[in-house]
Length: 345
Image (tube, rainbow, N blue to C red):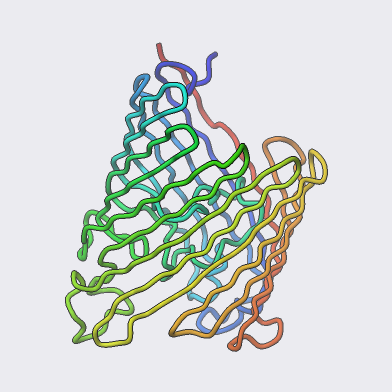
């Protein structure tokens, strides 16, 4: 049978299932006050319905237990939650050296580059860079509702996105506090395996229920968030290297305008067809919180082409962290599979 994506039309369902065990003293601290050893799971389903040669409907739906992600270690409660990370309809056309794709629906933010590697099977390490996450991070992993156009012309690629809310505070179509936002970026492939890019976003980010929207503050429409970043990707032989630098500004009238700088460099070295090692060094500097340095190391083993086992250790350092209390040891087992596929005519 032909694979669905190679046929003029068809349906395919892929999935990534992850099991994880983590040991960290952050899990013992308030407000979680739990055991330092926790187990959790994550499942991301990717349905794709190819309607015709040019039209496709696709989605990414995530179900995960809490606490799975490292930024959930300092929150309270245990639960299983489901999120739609992406759900869109796209139209694409292309010819040699150029292409255009237009998407409408729930979209991943067009800002930055890490969200392209957010799946556990694509992320060589276990944690994510400090700017990304779920809880009051400047770039949420959750989607925003809107429209996006992607254009490729030879070595140049560009994207523009218009959405109902900010990547710093995604809002559903049923939520209050929806405001027009834009994000976009561009990149240039200097040579095969070596690309440099830049991206930005701007628009109102607050809403009346937001944790940092205080009584007496100016209307959210008059308080934009602005971000700018650069990213680099290089790969050659057994090496893959990624890096990002980002600057964020969240405007206030009652308080001093909030600024945050983030950056990281990440490298992966393939040792053999089954083994690799990886490391990431990152930092965060902000106008309202102590500085933070993060170093993460991991080794990965592939028992087969569908599965990946990782063992990782993360070190967090900063004035607010005493000794090794911010460090985390994690083991993660990832399985990819195609659950269902049918090709049309």
